[in-house]
Image (cartoon, rainbow, N blue to C red; front, side, top):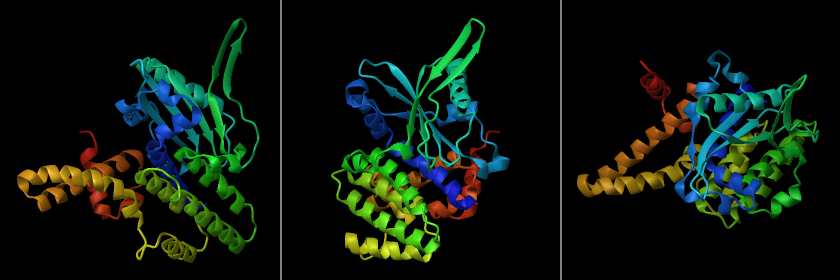
Length: 326
């Protein structure tokens, strides 16, 4: 995988974990809706996490870990912090249990908040990995356990039977393993083409909110890469045929569709005072800037953000400079 695609996959994971965080909790806990008060929303604590684990910008392409720390409330009104620590790249690091413990004690030390921690491993093998960190000396012992969810160990048949959006994300990542096992590049692309089309039909037929389907389709479209770029165009045409669209939805449109709906509602409110057309446009621009701001906080790669969002590089650099503390 090239550095560009590796970094893109890091960002895709950050985005999809945020998009389906509630689905992730429901996937891990069958009684999640009885435990958590989802109506109060989920607050993502990216700034708090960044303060504890700052990114080394000089080595931006070396990022192999994607983390999401979130605050959510239980039905009883108690505040609960949930950490998802994801090893995005295929290589497992032997110091992983220590890193999981490091996350725990730094969060506890600074914020005095207990956390429910989950580790997602994406390496392409079924080896069992530790789910605990143990430190012992004489009569003193420290044991820290966390939940390990390894994608390669999951059953494709069971995932296909699920209607949970997070299960579909797992299915996408797991399906890549099947295509990458082939030695010939042409055969790999052919296998990945079949996988992407099969999963596309599955997702589009699911009884899910349209915004969830778009999020999953966006992840599928951009996470599974063809070695021959022309196959990407062929896939878009075949997807057009499946959906009956006359024009393929681009990356920016896929990402911004849900945001535009929110922006339109905001714009319509503004339009009551300033004129509908002007209000809608202002709402869209405001929401677009909010999306870029979120991307800038999560990724140090200005060129990638500009390409991904379809905006000038100068615009991204100007926004980043404005966001830096004085």
